[in-house]
Image (cartoon, rainbow, N blue to C red):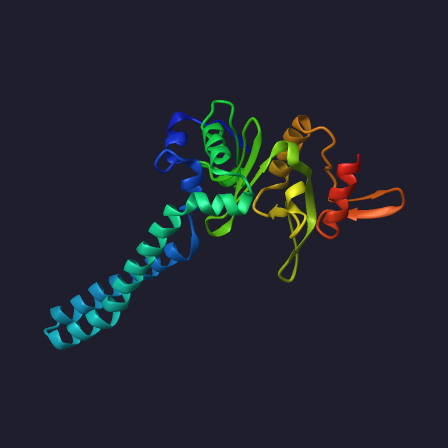
Length: 244
């Protein structure tokens, strides 16, 4: 569902004044290592402390070292990886989106503009508290955070299609969610978001359709006797959109 962006939310959406840097800081192996290291350190303190309380200092030192050393290594290594990841966040976005740094700075500015539209990717019945940054529409761009600190960024005038699908390939069956395709997705195909509810998917599609003339809003359709599918023959869908 679409949510109203408050000044408090804007401050939480940024890191060092950048929304894109904040998105890049989420998830990934670095944060996983830090979290795992903290767990090891907790065990080191609890088990080591328990043995010391039981007057078995040798056992306390053993368990403290057994869990503490790898815990420190994981936390330290994860922190170093995260620092390197954030230091190079602009390079990541340049490579991932194809936009140069000047344009990326403009995208960051639009993400903080008053006309930003933010869509929450949680079910409405679980929507208490701060909204989850599911997808943002600025004046000229679509920005959708992905797993592991990745992000899908496209100009609105490059968008080919946006559709709701119940046939997204998944483990032991199919997922349902939002399918997006742009002219920049010819190599690997578009992306999908299986966390949105159907209502939010349709809300996003309707909003995009109002802004983008000729946007394709069906995942699969037939044109002049040929079947097109944004999840299967996306290159053909892009070519058809470019000819229209």
